[in-house]
Image (cartoon, rainbow, N blue to C red):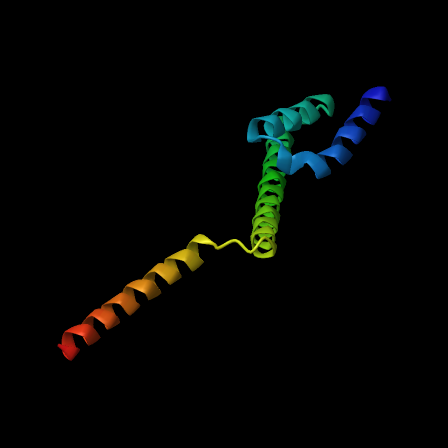
Length: 107
């Protein structure tokens, strides 16, 4: 019964920490579940596949949240993004070119 409780705890904590673990750690945990639950090889592969899919999904969600948090921070901190900087550089080049052409026409 203690083993089952340990598995239940790990299962609950996995939902929270899944995205923070490496792919190898996730595979090891899935194999541990597989062994403790004495799954067949077919069921074990299916379980591992589902586990990996959930890991990938959690990882993607975490990345999106981090990206959003960074964008929000940069906006609040009034920092310029790389795209904004590129747009400004392009605008400066275009303005220089226009000024240069006007100067040549005025001569």
